Image (cartoon, rainbow, N blue to C red):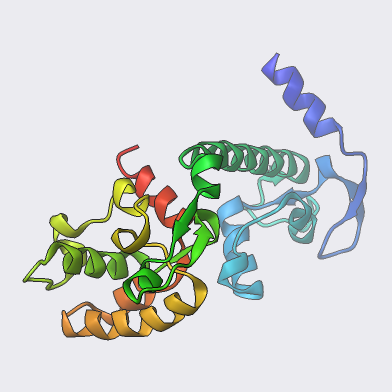
Length: 228
């Protein structure tokens, strides 16, 4: 059954392609390409490392006939295109399944719940926003804020202090006890938290990656994935 399915896949492409060296026309069964990882490396050298992966439509650009092929060109264009197509279908299915699991971590009710900007409340203002529209100052930024709320005396490298890890419970809190910021407040808070992180000995790479404005919902989804 599997062999018949593969045979159907390989025979499904009746297009005519040309050898990239001699321009002779052939069907996909009579052209050859090298190993996929070598082709990806070549594509990355030509198009940049961010494009170092092979799509099925890329393969004819590497195909040669039996007279022009090198010893490593042992895969037919047909089987390589079928293999690449199966691989990308599998990857897309995996991404879709991960997205379904990812979206399930935060319910619609939680995302649409009204919360209040913690910074505004500390200044005596009331700014209600939907949780899905709220911002947060990233992992280390939240760690620093949690340390201040706990009255932690030693904040050195707070992302390495387990007491200061933010949790789902922390991120769901409202008002000045929570970590939800409106846009003007997050814009003001991030530079301050970056300066605080530097005085605590946090590396510049960590500061750049983990002290920044980002969606509170993405923070909540991220922390809920821990241990899954």
